[in-house]
Image (tube, rainbow, N blue to C red):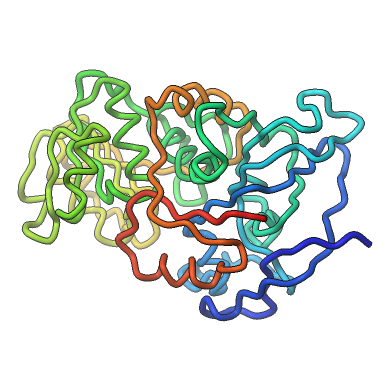
Length: 337
């Protein structure tokens, strides 16, 4: 049995449950690409799973088998391809969001030296960026893309009985809450790319960064309540979401839309309908096709991946501890030897 280094956990808990240890190299199955991982991107579902999905209702928590390997976002090199795969060749640089959300129970297994991915979830790495920046993109950028540009799938979200439909952005005013974070900083750039006027809500210390990536106005939520500062917005992309997302309804003009990335806790009390605005959400899905469509934007620098911190794979616990501190500007990533 071939072995590799991976980060595994055998129980739920804090960052200290993450162990850097030997694990079997995954076996290549039909329709898959075996990726030699060069870098891994961190995302909130990583620590949600590490803790046991405590924020989800008990009936939604997936059954988990230990030991498990966290992670979805990788950039690396195709080490092998299945006999029925001709879209990629051994040695090609690739990136992917692996098995999400189908791997919610630990089936993605990206915190490792090798990972297998369905060919439909893999795309060629943008040539203009390195593996660290490519690994920082998939989940956060796909989330922003599927909310703002093209959902790209018909998988229903259990929290809403209709498909999510992005809205036109050119010439519109878009407010992004949580604008300096992973999803938020991509949402700012995509909205600006599409011709929107962008209002970014974040801590004031991120103002220069946000204006550099395209924000027209930055509101420091520590100095004032953003929902009291703006009116007649066409779209609010709330990258924070949760129970407080409804406060942004009052900022929207009739016909506007509120897109909470994390909708759990929001209760529709009829205010949205009274104000003639739409509240809509979606669940990000893996898509090699969309990663390929976004690659030219990353390659050209039209969309940039901001990296807040870099850790070695063996330092996964420290990386998770940094994430728990909050106020991450862009993404946290890990290098893989």
